[in-house]
Amino acid sequence: KLTEYDCRYAARILTKGEASTVTQIQEQEFPNIHHSTLRKALHTQGLHAYKKATMPYLSEVHVEKRRAWAADYLKWDIGDWKGVLFSDESKFDLFGSDGQQWCWRAPGQRLDPRCAKKKVKHGGGNNLIVWGCMGWEGVGQLAEVEGKMDADQYVSILENHLLPSLEDSGISAEDVIFQQDNDP
Image (cartoon, rainbow, N blue to C red; front, top):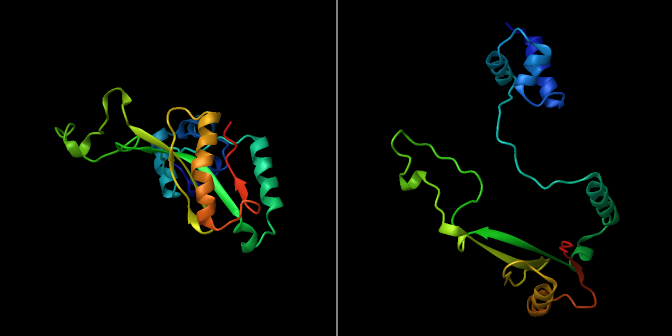
């Protein structure tokens, strides 16, 4: 029902973003072909449907700022980077992932412990948020973030964990470039 050219054409429409679903391609370009036939044709072109990966939203302003930052530091050598200390916060889930999970099972195995996602009632203690830093010589201290990070807690973390980490790194306080994530 579809020629080799039709298959390549459908794949090109999808990969160039002119359509985002098989149904859109089918309605726009191949109204007399069933969408399952079109899906099989796309498989022959090496395309398969997957869940979309999650990534941070970047506006045009964000992209431009990242390019400008990269251009500013493009000519830095290893010696320059040895004086940089990066920091960020990160969330760790204590009971598996908080995202979608998959398993393979047979009928009747729905509640088998291997096939069930564990959770704690009312979300109690499901995750831990920590602040940390790293530099050329390795990682610094970790600090638990209690509740929502505010200015007072952030200053306390910097005093109690950044400064000792800086001393351990061997970078002098006068020479360090502290690269943080602009968390408000």
